[in-house]
Length: 327
Image 1 (tube, rainbow, N blue to C red):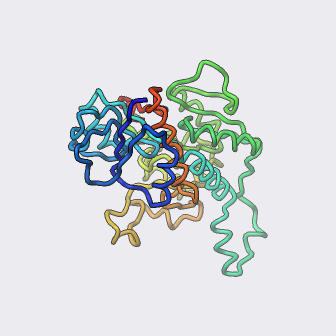
Image 2 (cartoon, rainbow, N blue to C red):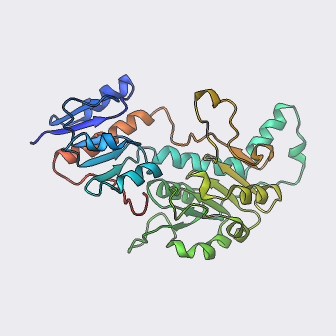
Image 3 (tube, rainbow, N blue to C red):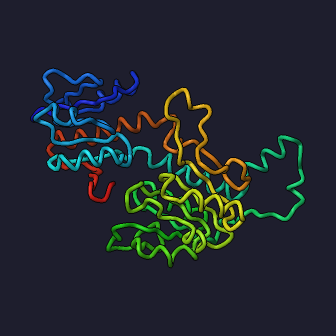
């Protein structure tokens, strides 16, 4: 077997680093660190945001592995100048992100947060008022982005007794076991009026930027719940805030946002949006943590090892990224 040389720009934590090396085939040689090996002869670079120097240092480089799902815009723009490089990513976080989708859906539909807050203040008033709570059984979920995350979400929604509609750029030729219907992006206006749950699992690309605006939100039923674990700018923030504040949208669960801390010092005081979502009782807020779990690090190493071992065997690596599409 020929030797496969791999370099990771960011070394994992000690336990994960040991675990990764234990999973790799004997003919995979791996190094890690911001300082490139000398000589820089790696065939595969593992990095989410490489510089031009990282891509040109090794004349052997033939593939870039992004160690998460998605493709940063700056990385995409740089890679367009390197058409000979194959690009792949990892889907190790599909299950925890899908679980967060459903957690946010249930918390928003059942108004868990304001009820919890009230009862902590010993206020039982909500128990004796007319309930806004949305029953999910028998309702329709529309999943935007039917990849690894979306398919897992579909399975959970089906278990809740929901009908599942999905939007996908490439509609498969055969019937799917989890989604009742799969449609191309152009069908979105026709699907929105049917959806009591709009679940956004899309990557952020030029095509998905601002995909859900005021017109799209107005097409949803008035008792609809929106969940976004894709990227904030997929949904117009002003339109979303106004729909929630005015009661035209029942509730929302949001794990992705519009403003992020610029540095470590600003992590404790950066508002996530330009509008006061934090003042709305019908919003569940999460600080972009859907992919995290106690097992995330090991799952990332397992998937990375499987990808690199496939390359070492001369097989096609899984999870190719389409630079033109942006994911």
